Length: 547
Image (cartoon, rainbow, N blue to C red; front, side, top):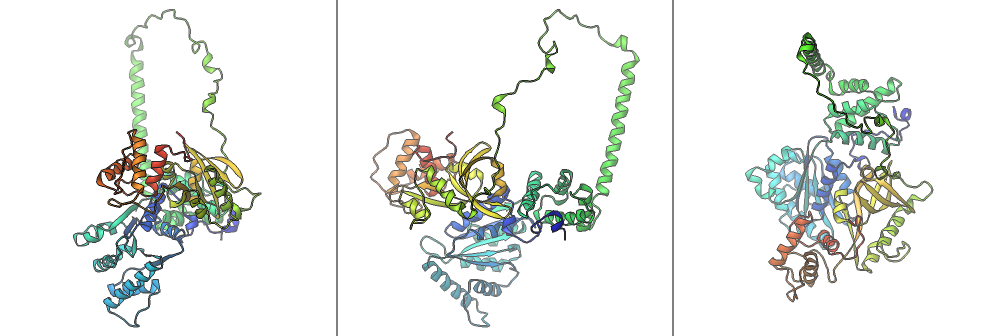
């Protein structure tokens, strides 16, 4: 009803879990990064919990938008089922055929196992996502654990992601479910938005819906934070009703009073009465008390001024300083080194084709590596990288992660619902340099956070003969390269290494390095560890921040 009135292209505060409207707070980025880590791992359980309406489902749908095409996804939204019913739903979601009217757990499990083996043989990754998982019974959770028993020598054939309310954590901590709890490889609890994030959240959703101007007064946003507690779903409901009320009153901005009226309707109680009135009463009492103290102090101070004041100290004839001479009011000289630079806007250039954003972004990324990139060739982006001893790393994370990796990257951005790609070429302090289309711009780092869903691609140099993650006990020639890099970093002589086994001694050295770099000290040598080794050893790779 109010969409046309405010010039909106669509309703900005729908409670549907639309990934386009996902505001990526630091918490949401961390939650998404945990889901991505779990998705890309070799199986087990991933746990994402949070209060009602904090955005768990939306974060998960954002994950699904970025999963590889060869993924087989089963999504269950109503898990209040018996073991037999859940197995039947899993079969239905994966498209697994089973005898009509079957109620045998063994037939269901055998059918699922056969499907998982076939999917693995075709290179598919099978993932089961269960929303509202706090409703799962202990028997059903145990059956899910048994499904994850199916595995090869290196990977489990079924990845399970559980989304649920905080009580799910309590349920999984029970002794009878300790075996399942031990198989959780990534877990994260999503909290409410901060006061700062609430303001950014509202602005983000309005921008995606087509309006850049501020429709909410600052006082209304402050009140919105207090009323909603930072819960996104409640923010959406309150903002939607407040915009409707603003439209009904013929106003152009949501005021604090209109928001309170909207909250009274939504929450079904007078949010501005009892607590506010009690606070006002106490404020009045405190004010009267303070005034009384001040008046009393004034009266007693005046009672015998001449007798109570000590004699004035003798003032020596000291030369006046510039401030004493009145130069305090002189105009201050500008501190040239502290003038903030003019920031550009992070948006797609209106005079360029947005359909070419992917091509221009990767051209800029490859340029950082002194490699000519052309999208018209027969090789794909990652195939071209391999011909130069590089690989693509497709990941999801935050600016904190990019600072740690310290490598130029292509970011997937969203401006008012329009998706485009840009190359991040520098990240120093709170300033970021990007190539957007054919333009080079400098923006505030926080502006990236408001338009970035967290997806990125970067290039990294691989050691020769690198085939994949290196685990303790593996026998590979890459072990020699790792030993050489650590020797360079530690400033010690390189010991001739004929033994190609990734032994305990080197594993411990790698763990120490990982810990010093803020990585998970698991001893597994994967892309992140290799990138950090390259940067620390000074391998001549391009970086975001040379400092």
